[in-house]
Length: 101
Image (cartoon, rainbow, N blue to C red; front, side, top):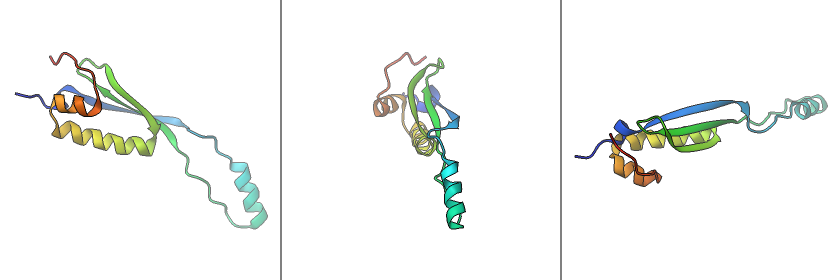
């Protein structure tokens, strides 16, 4: 009988605290002062890391991207963990074969 992927793997997420790109608040302040209208700034994006861990706690897949991309990827991986068996999950994400004990 096949083993559920959720019994073998788990997902771990690490959200960063530093922005991916430096912000330029001074230019917005100058634009606001010159025009009298507030200049909206770009949304600050933070780097996040997503790891798929096996039963021994070893990372078998690591993805680093902005937090919005990691949000979507995490939901997709969690959905696949719940519906696929171990081998199907390994095949879908290209994970190496390992001892499943």
